[in-house]
Image 1: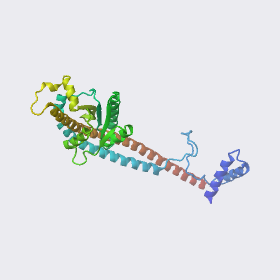
Image 2: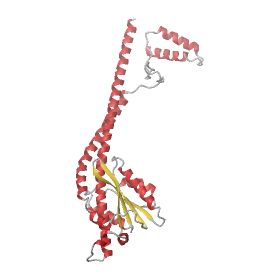
Image 3: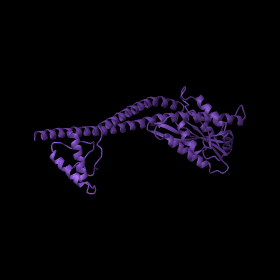
Image 4: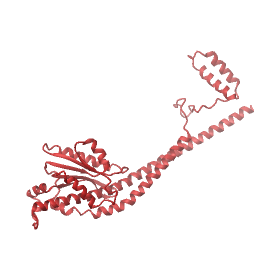
Length: 341
């Protein structure tokens, strides 16, 4: 009964303070009643009154709920555990991927020195092969490779007689480039190292699919790994046998060697196919190593951000809890004083 009287008195005072309410008499009566009920305090309706320190806080703003802050703290703590575990997994995979990448680093070097690397060679058909990852949470390495691929396509399209196609390695690149080049997408492949890891056989199968396009030039865009903090976007060019023959006639390294056995055209075809498979294999290994390094760095940043957010939420939780306890103590003391008076 006392709470109901206090609630009615509280509403009467608010109506009395509104000059246009048309209930001045009722409001005055309610205010007089509240004066006579001095032992009863205004009931708490879950709203925070503007404090002396924060005069700009509007009346009716709900106070921060301890339960909501606790739920948020639990969510951030769970996210921090996930990012920390992902960082450790990436650091473990990085060492093995780095060793495999270093072992295959010199595989395409002989054919590269023999046939050369001519990204600006004028040809009639070009295939761009951006190598991306299948999973996310690895920073912006996929976005950078897709930007490089778009730049290559734009440059090759300047040739009015040229034709440009895109063959994507990795699911993240496919999801970005298929919206931009729906007509130029030659094909894609994903989950290449899911069963048995990345091998030369897998790279050979992918190179066979690329060779079906009968392109004169294949341009591979990937992240070249140097160390855990440095991986540079790189473009490797592989020419077809006919384009390599044309480059050799203009003064290439091929004329410095004496040929024995099969004829020159057949040998150039074999060399071009092997160069494509070996260069693709080395690029996929380098990009996989760069993925683990980027993921480790991204998860470390995410863990630090989660820790910083958790500290701020803990401070907010403690302040809110302390303010609630202080308010309850003040109400108890005020009620006791009113009863004694």
